[in-house]
Amino acid sequence: MLNSIISSRWLRENLNNPDLIILDASQVTNQAGKKTEFENLQINGARHVDLKNTFSDANSEFANTLPSQEDFEKEVRKLGINASSKIVVYDNLGIYTSPRVWWMFKAMGHGNVAILDGGLPDWVKQGFETEQKLISKVETGNFEANFQPDLVVDYSYVLSNIKTENSLLIDARSAGRFNGTESDPRKGLKSGHIENSINIPFESVLENGKFKPMAALSAVFEVLQNENRPIVFSCGSGITACIVMLAADLVLDNKKAVYDGSWTEWAERQNLKE
Image 1 (tube, rainbow, N blue to C red):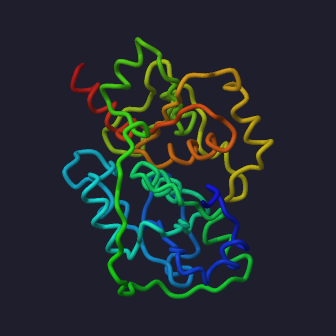
Image 2 (tube, rainbow, N blue to C red):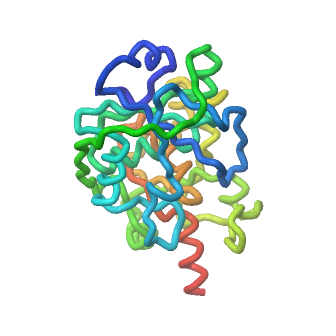
């Protein structure tokens, strides 16, 4: 079983493993406005994951929501992924969209998945092989999805949790968006936060494009050391929530889930109620 985070050197040394599948989760645009120097490059043999289209629920009114078990299984098989596959996910921003794909595979019952710490920028920095982005034909895989409902919560759960406080909600957006002092990048969406949630911006768990060392991560989550409740992670639309969830998973034993609709769904639904 893979560790949740692997290094560029480990990946380079294991490229010839027949069960290893490398997934490129890089996207053309992002809400954080981040840019990459490696837009047209990929690790040799990588297969592209289209989060915005193929790996989002086409019937949802909200961005990036988890597809159905059936749709996820079908699209993963198209990538040539099998039940025995060891999956390594990276993106070209260092760490941004790759944890979302890590969480999606976990939520669909495939635990043998890791992200590349530092992503494509670190891979290139190490001098390892890249190629121009391409789409190669692969043999259909036999992957079987097994949805894990404990890893996902919905609007109804978050709404009721304001009163029950059964779970702690962590918001991964910037402090400005959380506090309502900074505009939301989505047009017409107000900023602010869900009642009783706390703010741990995703950038606070990263350093130079990688996850902070374990001791530093423990310090980030020090306020939660005596917190035994399950933790729910939220952000703008479910992407950066997974960064903080993965970081927390390295240092905290609490049960963890993602509020998939995140602030986009919450703010829009609350607007309708007002």
